[in-house]
Image (tube, rainbow, N blue to C red; front, side, top):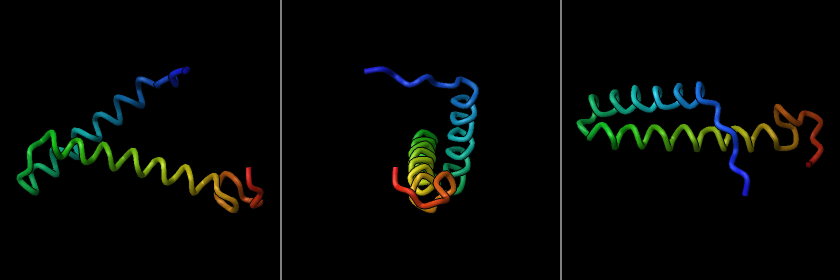
Length: 69
């Protein structure tokens, strides 16, 4: 099994977004920081997967002619 290459700059941005979102969620709701950061991280990953599936679907942004792959 070959592991995907991870772009360190994008990973650092993702971690920063998780930290900022976790801090904001912690401040607004009173939950622990790490719990908020985990929720934000999972939400970012799920959002990315859903966007990729929708973009690759027939008629989507990456497949405008509607041909299934």
